[in-house]
Image (cartoon, rainbow, N blue to C red; front, top):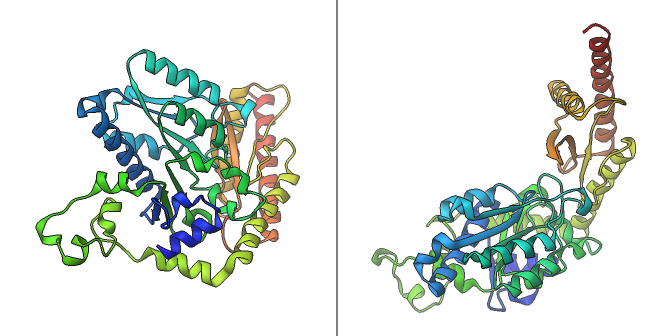
Length: 363
């Protein structure tokens, strides 16, 4: 509990998310588990209020950039697939969820007799590092009485730096919040709550063989009621060690260094997609070529670069475009690695472009 409150303090989370309030936090095994227990708590809260027969009417809202873990959680929780709303994003909002689209979708479902109950916003989506407008989305969620969850699995770590804390503006409107510390924070996963009672009521079991005086008298926290498994690993020790070893200022410098290295790489690539976080999107293009050809070109470049064994990059698809992704997040990453990666990319791109020219000359 101390570790969770310490980390919550670094992120400047509202008191409602800390143990001194009605909320608190717990370390889950993964971000996927965190989203699942959040969804279960929200589902059971609504079913208790509106009746179990309401399950087939419950609707979940998210963007097309949200991690697929939410879709899997909905399947496990019994949310009907046709009630899983994936709202489209585009470059006009930097792939952030549009409040207008959300409002329209919720209003449409209410008119159809459905029950909107859960909204998931993201701070630093896996695919595009999009940051959803939390404050505005939170007001919409409050207006329609939706459970508002914020998934800050990736970019949440950077928010211990004051200059990136605005990404979390509006977090006070949320019912739950999670970040994935093993993505960038060198440790484990966090999941925080404004009201822990909803989680405990959803997951609590109390068989005879687990009853004891301390639990019955509420003298201890039974974390079996905060998670999927009964047993629990000592994950907080890893997080505590990171916080003790680095300290606040060193952790902040750690994130800033990675972001600067990403900006260094961004400076090499003309036409790259700028990111305030340590991920850069770019693609190889040729003049007078259609989109299908460019997509094939970048697919080939990805395979060629990764086949060298010197660096590994990943890809995504944004607005129908196959885009390459250069991530800086490893603890031992240095500036020389960025220069070496750029050299590999240049060399393999030259080969790819030469091959494409040969194919056009000799079809």
